[in-house]
Length: 260
Image 1 (tube, rainbow, N blue to C red):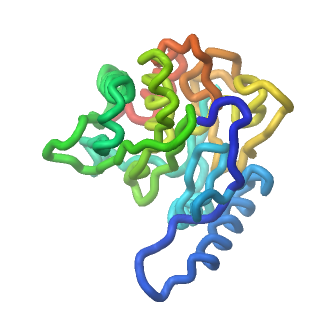
Image 2: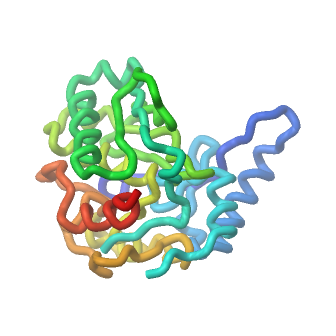
């Protein structure tokens, strides 16, 4: 979630380990898969060798392939087809780096964001690391600026990293809680509620991230139109955010992860 029109230029893919892989070809395939899935080409940005859509959501090569392979779940909150497999993942551990922990408000915001999810009684719990019994791990690390970035799940696991801007440390803890909760939402498969018109929360000219069919699936029980302040998953945030889920956020999360 980059504040206002912040950003980068989209680039491609997560590099696979191995000395015989070609990062350029992997990037090309990731972008090709996203375009085929329905994401507008002008919403795909390459930053530091990684592909992003929606300005803050990293898409790995595996995740882009899953977008093409998996069907649409029947039926403003939206998710990807890439979700966390709760039959396997019961405990998600969020592990802040030492640099992240050096910012007192970011650290407080992380605790509050974890509590947001745990208060809902979902099929998985979140815990601050280091700890034991983790079925999946997410690293919380810092980046420059006052926004954040993350990515979609892959292979039934949440995305493994959230990046939180150090500039947020000058905001209140509630705003930081909001941004971290938002980025954790991406790691478990939530898309922006105003993906079809980012101007709703970000201002400026209308920008559509792309519906994609399998890439922006409406979650039953939630509105199909977004409004300012209606969701923690709006593209951009305000300085007045409370950091708490709205009623529709809760409906969306319970629909996806509330029935074990």
